[in-house]
Length: 223
Image (cartoon, rainbow, N blue to C red; front, side, top):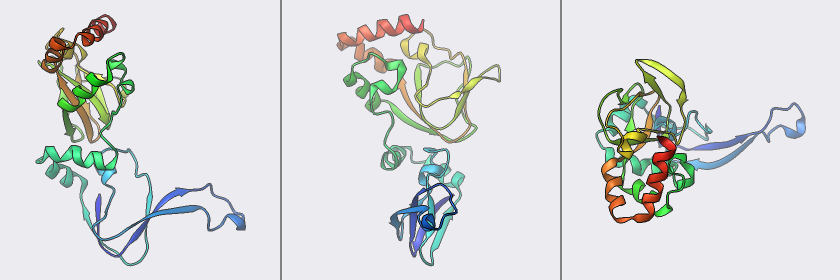
């Protein structure tokens, strides 16, 4: 749940040392960091699917009044304001990825071209148990998983391991080889995808000759 502190204060327990029974170590198992006060929010990164587990303990410092918002309610409301999602994510953890080297599919692409794709692409958030693309449906988008857990399916059978951060779906669609997706992609948690389209790539290829070298290499590597 998303927790909003209405009054009082709490502190973030940054780290917990290994448990020990020695007297010298007692009282030094925790390291307390920043203080949370009125209107501060707890669990936002967890509710938004940016982390799989809560990264810290939050300890009440004195009497606190806290408003709890169910995670599904918050996400459902937030989906009505999609333009706000990247802003929230950026404040919490940054709009991953930052560098072209973080994504193997874009290996060899100039950083300027990569940054342009990221800037012009869409940032899409999906609830758990939602279909991102469906097998045999048409589309020209490349979907890059930034946060969350998703799986690939063929004929409703899960393929291999879940998608890892930085993996992409729709390579052939993005490169212009096909319009049909070979797999279904379904989220298992709240997921964030960057979505880029073949039309963006075509527009860039028309004016950027070095990008054509990456395009030709990508065709060889992927097909």
